[in-house]
Image 1: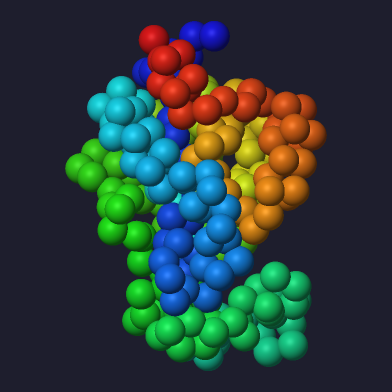
Image 2: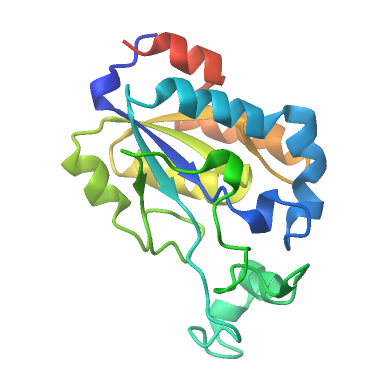
Length: 210
């Protein structure tokens, strides 16, 4: 497989403290998988070797103000996953993605470098729903979108599905993604992603760039 680097972008979903740092609201659930799969180190290698060859887009989750005034109490935005996150405890307070806390900040190990593009405004599972990522990819004449980040079967999967529907060639870099359990990871890798794109390791992706 050959991947034309001038038409390729890596989209890194939510490499933030609330997921990836001890004390974060959701770290306890994903910690074992991060360690077993060596995901942070894999991401460091991927970004380090791909930078300068392909475009790199970071799509962090947007911070909420304390008390979540952006969402109506009892409304649909406070149900489901978001409602659960609002009640989660972190070392720095209650609630995920709180502005003024370390939670929404990108982890030090994956700090963006000059030339990387940070896409703001992600407030839903799907990175294409509430951000300018679609425009930015098309403005850069991107055809191949390689997804990495968190969680595999939530935001990565939702974003990859949208990319497929929008006509992009979807790649998922499996050893640069993680979720809460191996069972969930396996289902996404083995059942969902092969139907919307190609599943690669970081080494396979880097070797295929041409």
